[in-house]
Length: 403
Image 1 (spheres, rainbow, N blue to C red):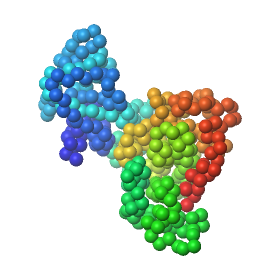
Image 2 (image 1 turned 135 degrees about the vertical axis):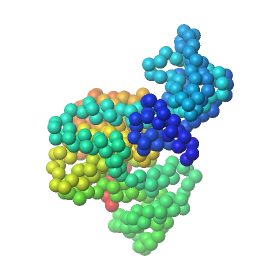
Image 3 (image 1 turned 180 degrees about the vertical axis):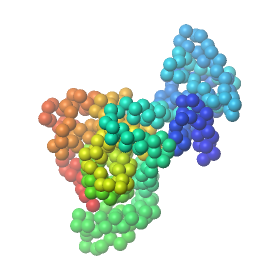
Image 4 (image 1 turned 90 degrees about the vertical axis):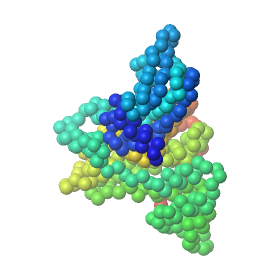
C-alpha cells in the first residue's frame, strides 16, 4: 500500500496525469510499478510493450536513431518524473548513467483515462442532453459520481477459475462470504433444472450438484446481477434490456473463446457481462431524478456516454487494462486490436448476439475484429462458421443465467 501511495503521489506531480481525479490516479497507481535499474543498463523503446516509462530518480542518456544524445535528470521529491520515450520524442534507446528509479505505467489504462474528457467534448449534444451530460461529467471529473460497488465475490470467483490448483473448498468459501449469493445458489441447486431426490442444504453440496463450471458461471451471473436494479419503470426496463444484452454477449464471448482456443473462456464470460457496465451508473443517476424519466432519453444518454463511464467503472474495480479496453471499445464496430484480445472477442460476440436476436447489425466486412480473431468473414445473412454446431452449448450457457 505504501508503494501505491508513493506512485499516486508521483502521478500527481506529472503534467500528464496531475489533472486526473484522485481516485483515477489511485487506480492508475495500482496498475503501475516502480523498478530500480542499475547503472549502465540499456533500455530500448521497442522493448516497451503496453507500458510507458518515466525516470523518477537518477541520470539517463537518451539516444536517437542517428546516435545523438540528450542527458535526462530527475530527482525524487524535487522534480516530476520525466518520460523516457514520449510519443513526439525521437529517442529510440536510453542508457542509465547512474542507478535509477523508474516508473512503469500501463499504456491502455493511461490512454483511457486521458481520453475521457476529449470524448465528452467531441460528443454532439442538443441543449437538454448537454445540460444533463455537463452535470454528469462534472460528477465524474470531481470524483463524486457514485460508481457501482465492486462485486468482490464475482471477482474472487474469476480468480479461482483461473487457478488450476483451487477446488471445491475454495469456491465454497468464496460463495459463503456473500449471504445473498449463497442463498441464490442454494435456490438454483434445488430448482427443477438441477433438483435430485434429496434437497441440497449446504453451499458445498450445491457446488458438487451443479458442477464446478456451472457454479462459477452461475455465481458470477448472480453476483453481477445484483447491481442491475432501479426504481422508476423506465429505468428498470433499461436495466433489464442492458442485462439481457450483456447475458447474450457474455455467452457468445465464452463460446468464441472456447471454440477458437483464444484467451481464457471464463474471463471472456466476465468480459461480455461487463461490456455494457457503463450504462449502470447512467441509469442509476437518472433514477435519482425527482420526476419519472423518459426511456428514449435514457437510451440516448447510454449510447453517448456508456463507453466513458464503463472505463471509469472497470478502472474503479481494478479489473485490468484488458477489460478496460472491453468497456471502452465494445460498442465501437471499427475497433481493430493489434492482436486477439477480449475487446475483439466481445465485439464479435455482440455482432453474433444481435444476429441471434434478430436485431440490426453491420455487415461482417465492416467489423475488423473478425479478421483480428482469425475468423472467416460471414457472407450476408450468414452466421459465424466457426460457431456452427454450437446450438446445444449456447443453450446450456444461456440456461446458467435463467435463475
